[in-house]
Image 1 (cartoon, rainbow, N blue to C red):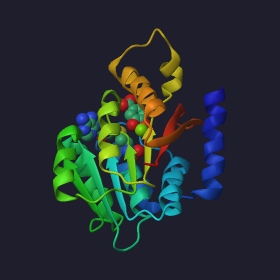
Image 2: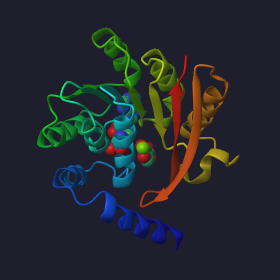
Image 3: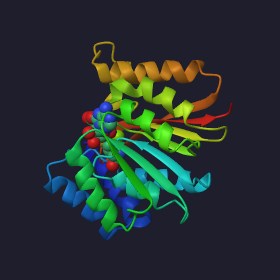
Image 4: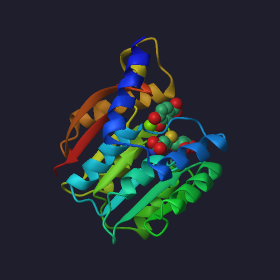
Length: 222
Ligand code: SAH
Ligand code: DHB
Ligand code: MG
């Protein structure tokens, strides 16, 4: 019942504020047709990412976890002409679908996809794009959130935003019966955020067509 209501309210919100966009819809349709899992951010969440990037005037964005490029397109659309978005994806098939979706969005000059395990490609990114990123969106395998957060700190500057998706997972985060690697990675992230003097952070729960979840937002302050 609540799930139906959350989904209907997402439809209501998106009907007003994130209306049908052929390029974004085609990205989802082609992702589904290629057999990719249906785990992209929702339209209103994508728009939140876009708004946050716009708010800070982001010119360089790093995304960890591309899937079919849905959140990538939202984020890349926030960038100025000379902006750059680097996105990291483990699965070659996901990256291939994303590449086509990003090209259709006219963003192939702005977006660079690196294929491989992110903990390895991050080291490559540091060599090829040494400048700090203004916004880092972490949305890949949850067990590696601690490692991704450490990298995000290394690749950021004072004033950067680090956003991590899926930090509630339907309540699993506080369920003592849950101890899979993903949940453990999310809990460790909270501990790191709490004691890290270089960030101020919060977390927000979300409900919507993709269930009950949430994200953390950390501002790098030092
Ligand atoms: N950000 C996307 C959703 C990403 S889903 C959106 O909202 O549209 C998570 C993605 O992370 C999947 O495509 C998965 O293949 C990828 N992933 C999983 N483990 C990874 C790893 N070690 N390195 C990079 N990407 C990984
Ligand atoms: C999963 C990953 C995501 O990034 C997400 O938004 C939802 C689910 C998953 O791996 O199950
Ligand atoms: Mg996610």
